Length: 112
Image (tube, rainbow, N blue to C red; front, side, top):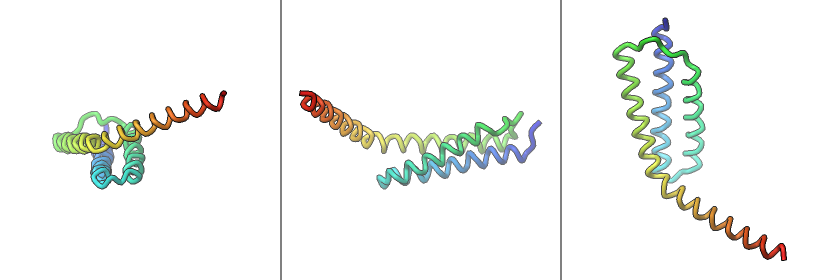
């Protein structure tokens, strides 16, 4: 059986993820893409840490509610981040597509 300390460790990681995704959302609102990417790496580290935590046999009602609240906020932040980054990602995709087309044309003329 797991102890209350392990529950707190897992909840602390979820809380850290919630804080990081909040900072990611703020960076996305400011179009600070470098900061967003940096924060995303920290978020991924926290997620990996959660995967390594032992699964508690049973969370208390309070811990289960805290976890559910944190997950709701994390998912809400993620949804908003995706809304803000989608246009930027589309622009990058178009730019990369255009650059790729230019490279193909240049290679065609170089081959002749």
